[in-house]
Amino acid sequence: MSTLAPTVPTKCRRCSQPAIAFVAAGSYCSSCFDSYLHSKFKRSAEGVRYFSRTGCSMDHSPLSGKQSKPRTVVQDENGGHLGAPRYRSRVLMGLSGGLGSRVLLELLKLWFPKRDPASRAPPAFEGLVVVHKVLTEELKQLVESLGIEGVRFIAVPLSDIFKEPTDPASQTPLERRRKLIQLLHSTPSATSHKAKPDHTSLETLQHFLLLTLLRRLAQQEGCEVLVTGESSDRVAELTIEGMALGRGYTIGEEVGVEWEVGTEHEGGDQEFLLVARPVSGLLRREMDEFVRVKGLVVPRPEREGERAQEGQTIQAVVGKFVKGLQKEFPNTVQTVLATVHKLGMRSTDARMRREEGEDKGQWIGCALCGGPVKEGAHQWRTAITISDLSKTQAVGSTSRMPLEEVESETSNEIVKPKVGDSTSWLDPSLCYGCLSIPRAISRLEDLPSYVQHRNSGRMEDVAKEFLLYE
Image (cartoon, rainbow, N blue to C red; front, side, top):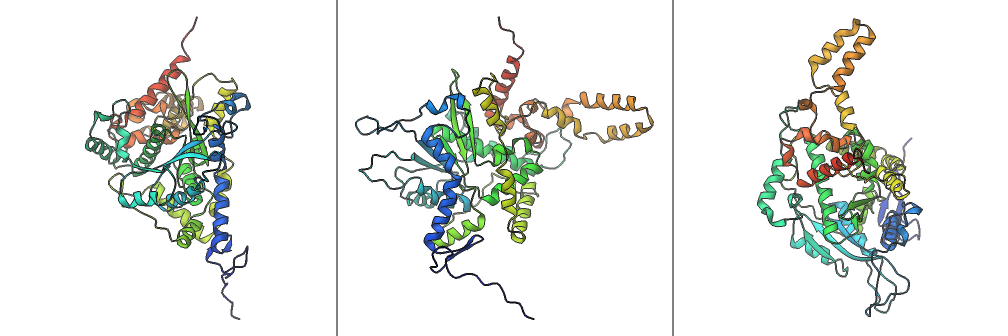
């Protein structure tokens, strides 16, 4: 008995017109496929539009008064208000040149439609800045072809993470470039038990250097929103990567749709930046179809020497694993995302406690990634890490000793680890997932200065708890 192969529907599931786009949700004609993706994009970007309109994210405490604190008032040509005061944000987009960022760039046109000169309604957003690591004529023309009024394209290499904000001319671009290569092609430190380069930790370091640079650029460009182009598949990969890398404590900030990051300034003022992933609701397959139907060109610039390229990494293994699962079991990504959407954010909880007066301290993130830090994580990691096999064998040989003596000797080994073997002066300021990075580089002094500044700020905040005030 022969079986018939499944046939692909040839008509749009919505309007019965000839279908040209085929995704898991069904077959669509061109206009209905646009509506389908635009609807998913708007749902994912709802929090960003709210932030632009009100000046705060949707998860602030009602006691904070954030809703009554204006950011930017839209005015008419004569300086008068256009009706009620409105708030709008400038947007910085990180353009990687890959599929997700290209689709995001195209969908951002929905945020910046051509306005009727007679319209008195304020725009949803004030302006758009697109940043890539290399200034090419191809990318510049691509950004300008969007037709978004006032859009700017800038090029900032990753090596600018070493640029001092207070003294930008302190080093030449070549010197900063050499520093980056030296850092990302490090050999393990002399105190590390590893003999080969830790490519997984170096790739993690590069990832957070890039995110830190983008956040810094957003603030320098006067942007209140930073958007990146991670798809649903990429968010699923980041979630599993995070669990494999011990980043469970910070996973909410690292894979959430939005994360509001606060930066303290002198005088106690705080400036907020919303980091968002507005296309995280789109599957990679849907993006592929969107690019094909629209005839979009996805620029994939060649990677330069700013990445640890040799050796296998956890990130590469997880990426291959998720792609294989999604191919055989198409609901894999949606299943992971169902978990992601339930994750809370430690930084949000801490901020709400401060807004409600329960916590007077300043929240300071990890010196490397900026995420939340679990106090004592470095001590716990040291306690469970086997750094000396001979000591482990010695403890095993005490199996015939009374239990009280075994517990005493074991606890002494845990409480008094050799600092030179497994810890660094930076460890107390790091989240659990970043604790492996100092051992993957040759010298901590090679890290950008912002790491030292965050570490100093955290140490000062801890010291304040022991000060006595009259």
